[in-house]
Image (tube, rainbow, N blue to C red; front, side, top):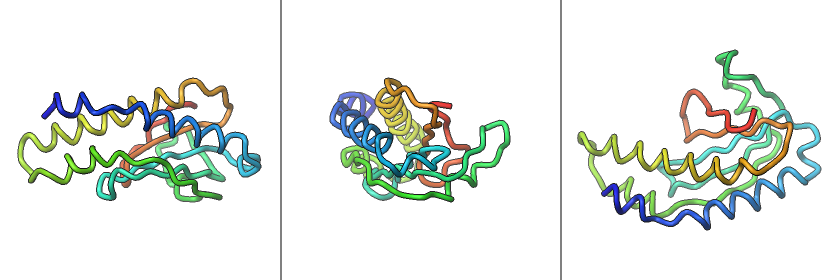
Length: 138
């Protein structure tokens, strides 16, 4: 299973995230924003959204409720192949490892999409209901 996951191309996912993030950063919606929160949903076809947030707290404050107070939401890409793999197994010892590998590949792909941007606005990410939220750019 790990080879199958490793061989899923994510270049399109990375490119789509770059285009959407560029659009968000260039939009007028960003002028009052304190952070951009990217969330993907394991249970919903690995679909994602960019939330433009009016508040932000660093991880040291241990309060990620700021991410639920958003100004605008922009739909992001999904990774349907990850979703098919995630939905295809029952809970067992290997399912946790498979899920973690899917999450890790998603984080690496999103981080590579975001790292080239020069912004003073924090960009964070998490899967739906993950705690704490990962700070990609702070």
